[in-house]
Image (cartoon, rainbow, N blue to C red):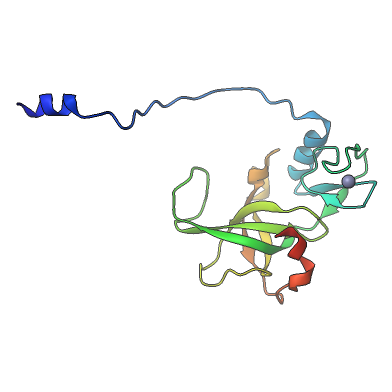
Length: 169
Ligand SMILES: [Zn+2]
């Protein structure tokens, strides 16, 4: 039997079918405010009127209490604390770091919800409680996109105490 015939009898394990889908996303009031602010280099969260927790990014209503947030916003620092992290060894589009890289759950100062981002640091240095700060694209490249923040980077501050972030693990 020829090689071609043998190949024809092999079971097909994988079929690659690249697909793409273009769609328009209506950001809505809350996300629009958040995205317009990030185009100015500002990180806006919103405070729940029931328990005062600050959500970032805000979706305009509290997922726990079901109440809307209104127009009040809280401007957050671009500094935060690493709550948890993972080492990534699989390539991904739009990540400006070399493999392997670090993804972090970061609790921005003043926020009560975590943000998932990437950290530019040595793998052996990352740890829970590490203090980090956003590294932004050059200002002239800012758009209404979270991609304005390229990644986070460690800063020279003492680690945050476990008690300050343990509820976010
Ligand atoms: Zn709430």
